[in-house]
Length: 326
Image 1 (cartoon, rainbow, N blue to C red):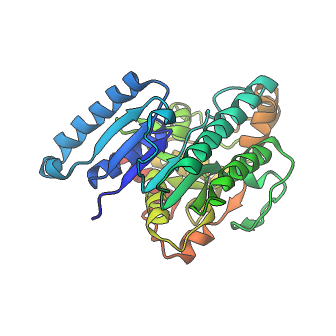
Image 2 (tube, rainbow, N blue to C red):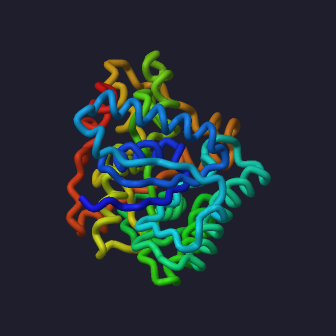
């Protein structure tokens, strides 16, 4: 396999660490842009040690990872084959005050803008730029209609946030660099340390106590994706030159929230029948609860399916069982 050179932002996050792990296993050279180089390098060193313990036969082929505190520290004649931008403050970390909304926007736009300026001046351009986005792009107005990458958004905050994020990344496309916008669904998986991460980390304690259940009516759609397939789709988009523009990074069979709760309860061998009242979520979380928990989109990964990507975990039951068994 050709040894590729990667520049990654958001490399210490839930998705970034899993992507990093797979790239290291395949022998690639990685530079990670991070605000805290010391902490990041500690995590990466531990990751490398863990990989060596679990895959001793691959020691000689293992890739390398370095940290960057600033894009300004990169020589203008440096060359990267791939740039992956996963940076952005977690959208569900805090209630959406006006200040938090601005932070969410700034954390996405500022990094994307800095990467554009770097790539504009780079003497050697990368082959492909992968930019983070999310299913929030489609907004709240589609109901039960299946959505492929051609569907439009609306005036909701999550939709406008993703639209601004993609528009900023589109400037990189204008430089002649193949660009993909990764509209990520609800990511199900474990961290590289082996603990439940992302959405499952917040759900599991309640469901393990037998106190889980649907949210509101439970009729809202949950377009999910197993972490292995998300990383797989990122890498497939990098290698397949025919893929560009928006990509729905979801499994092919979305489910309603009620079905998701039932399947998670079944996987844990626990009842999952206690609903979370919609009025309580609106009271506690306001707009964030309305857009992220009480609404959802039935999204289909048409572009990936058409391009021939083969999902490891197309069905929710298989995905949950795999994650819980690890």
